[in-house]
Amino acid sequence: MTEHSEQPAQAEHPLETPKNEGMGAADTELADKLAEREQEILRLHAEMDNLRKRVERDMDNARKFALERFVDGLLPVADSLEMGLQASENPNTTLEAMREGSQMTLNVFMQTLEKFGVTPVHPIGERFNPEHHQAISVQPHEGPADHVVSVMQKGFLLKDRLVRPALVVVSKSAE
Image 1 (cartoon, rainbow, N blue to C red):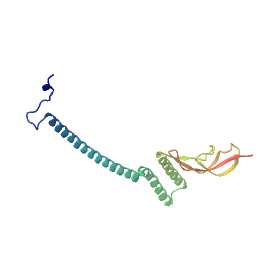
Image 2 (image 1 turned 120 degrees about the vertical axis):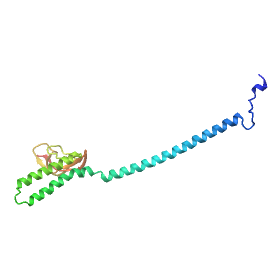
Image 3 (image 1 turned 90 degrees about the horizontal axis):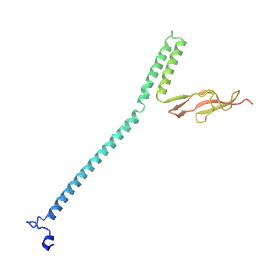
Image 4 (image 1 turned 90 degrees about the vertical axis):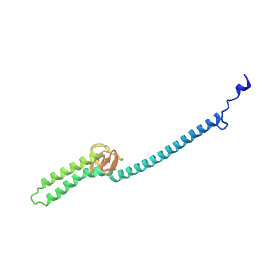
C-alpha cells in the first residue's frame, strides 16, 4: 500500500471537510432530539398535572355525594312515615291500618338497608359471639350454656363489619 492511499481524501474546500460536515449534522440531530424530548417531558408534566387535578376533583365529588344513592333509597321511607303521621290524624284510621302501614314502612326500610349491604344481627339460639353481641344479662336456661336466649336490640353489620352489636341475654347452665 502506498502512503498516498492511506491518507483520507481531502475536500475541495478546506472548511467543508467530511469530518466537520458529519459533526454538524450529528450535533443538529442531537439538538433536535433533545428539544423534542424536552417538549415531550413538558407535555407529560402537563398531562400529569391535569390528571392529578381531575383525580382530586373526582375524589371530592365522591366524598360529597357518596351517600346520594343511600339517601335516595331512604326517601320512600320518609314519605311513608309522613303518610302514617297524616293517617294518624284522621279519626277514621284504625289501629290495624296504622300497624299495617308501619309494618310496610319497616319492610321498605329494611330492604333499603339490605340493598346497601346493611344486615341485621338477630342471634336468638346462636352461640354468644363477643365480636357481634354485647351481653347485658346472663340467665339460667335449660338449653346449652353461652347461647343467646333473647335479643333486647338488634345489631347491624355493614358488609360484614360491625356497626352496632346486638344487645343480648346469654344463657348459663341451670345448675
